[in-house]
Amino acid sequence: MRVGLTYDLRDDYLREGYSLEETAEFDKAETIEGIEGALQALGYQTERVGHARALILRLAAGDRWDLVFNIAEGQWGLGREAQVPAILDVHRIPYVFSDAVVLGLTLHKAFTKAVLRDAGVPTPDYATVERPEQIAGVALPYPVFAKPLAEGTGKGIGPRSRCANAAELDAVCRDLLARFQQPVLVERYLPGLEVTVGVVGTGHRAEALGCMEVRLLDGAAPDAYGYENKENWVGRVEYALSGPETSREACAVALAAWRVLGCRDGGRVDLRADEAGRMNVIELNPLAGLNLVHSDLPILCYKLGMTYPQLIDRIMRSALARHGLEPPEPRP
Image (cartoon, rainbow, N blue to C red; front, side, top):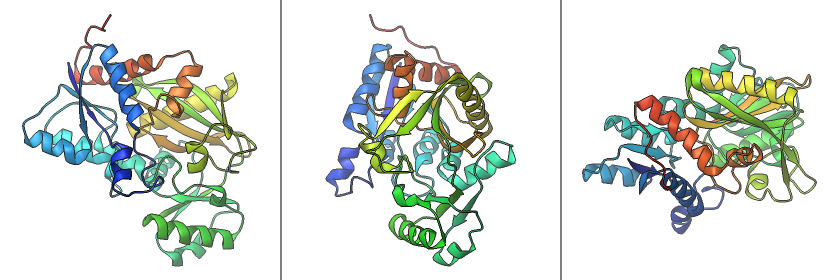
């Protein structure tokens, strides 16, 4: 079975002059090598394609694949993560992970929260700020938490994200609006435990793999599992499997969110506890990072005793089942 790999390689964009923060969501070469090695060990024939523009050129030249393993984040627009799936849908080429509708929805954090809230899945109260004059109208109790509406990997999140008063919120919102050229999501700040839940599968077959706590150490930027803490997590962040009670509640809430939004094959759900200890969904990650060393989902799997190839196999089997395809024989 020929599997194409679509992705955005961080080094390509750094060579073009983009900053480390601007390219934070793009993948390192070691991630692509790890995914490709795992797929080949499972018996798949792989072919690197690259980003959306490269995919368009390859399709125009007549290239096709039995399945595409898509982790391309895209570069521009609120629908950037949906670009590759939409292109593949046009050509009726099956692919791994969520479709264009889901990826467009989950990247827009306010739309995601509206759907979750309507379905009864707990998520913090929020407001959206599109222009500076809207900041004063945010009617949430302090402290609040402000972040870009449509970014991942902790971009735009740091010690200033937790705002204790109106003056701090005004300063942070103005900065984020100018830096990211997109709306700002303002949420009621939840003071409790932060966890992430790994999920594999689709719909009623989706399964929570487990729940992992994210603990900020003394050397971490305070109050936020943001860009700096994610990029330089050694010595700043400690990961530990949650206890049975926390895991049970977090996994139940995460699965409810995963199914409501129609996420597919594999990913993560990030949650945080409120004052009463109840788990609330903070974000969904249907294109979760898959770096072998420092991405949350593989780290969680290692702590559960699952190898990287086993994680990739679970993801692939979900995609193959959706498309009515059979897995190949693994290599010896």
